[in-house]
Picture: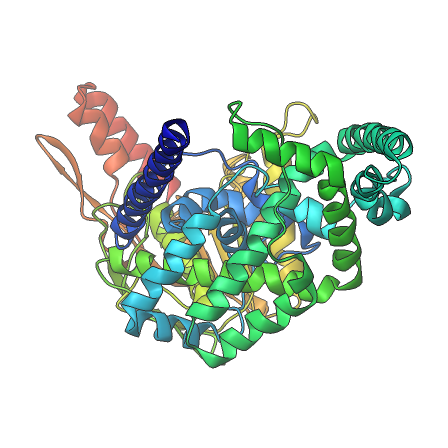
Length: 536
């Protein structure tokens, strides 16, 4: 009696410890999640697994060159406060698209007006988390490789055969006992043989089943009717899998985990769940994609609201048919202390100015906001409007030694993408330091010809150059703007402000004198510059 009472007390103490631990962990999770909203993400993490879902799109709207030119991996990190691997992957894919998700603005407005609901949704997504197997979900779900499991059609019968044999023991002890051992050994062999073949998929299967459970929780929490219906419809074919949690082996030697492992082994449970999931996924590919996108969209929406809260100002872009880029207080979202610029580009633009004066950052700010505006309806600006369309860049060109391709050849290939796209019209084109990989005479001639061709197309082109000759050669086609710097005794100062007209300073030569070159050298450089800039 005393021993039984002592055992009961131990069980109750263990249960109380588990409950207290669960409450403590829940509080920590809640504090961690809610503290992230409205703060710039600081977490450092590898990106190699996150693009897996995006790579399923055969022709993304933002090509690899533009993505690389604009450092969009850094922009993604700046946006990414998603709580789940699914949200991260959907956000990464969405940044490659140039149209927002269905009812996106409605979802954002709904969550912005209901902070408590938003917090509850984010907590549920945090419990889905960025678990092992979550990043392999796209391959498992959308590109499955079915494994042939031995005797798979007999699994439902074999699962209960040991228990049926046990029922025979009171009546036929030797027969029942013998059949029980045979069936048990057979199931053990089938379990480990099958598990060896699908072990790599079991983690992804566990993540998929957790995704289904999270989808149901989001459906019950979200009060936006259209989004709830979308979640419900996507989940409907997979409801038979709810509550199924496969095992991934014994962890830590815990007795409870050991018992669960024996139960899964005896009933072939993991393998049966795996087969059922494979059949349902193969039968409902559209609902599968909708399920992944719907859950990811909720996580992504809260992340976008958090991103907006970190900006000094933001706006929803205005889209129009006019080939004009109009912006007020526009800046690059990656900058800690950005300098905002305003302007209205009603025709193609040529930017001039010295190195580090702000040309490249401004070009990237225009392009990045054109992408964010179309994909997430969010611009880092006080006001922003443009004609929606493809965004293409030619900026961070690099030569390819392994392929034997020169820098100039790489530049030409990069620009060819833009001229090909421009023939279809409606593009936003951004070029930094056009054709700098060749001699001055040919560079000017080729640059002028390419920019004239782009001007003839129904596109908006903004190009930056150090060649001031282009400002008068293209004066009728391109509007000139510039950035400038101020030289003082202490050095060079930049204000990064956009100014009308072409750059007319020669600070590069003045820097020679500032840094100690002989005055004769500086005067000679000025004379040569004046001779070289004489118009024909």
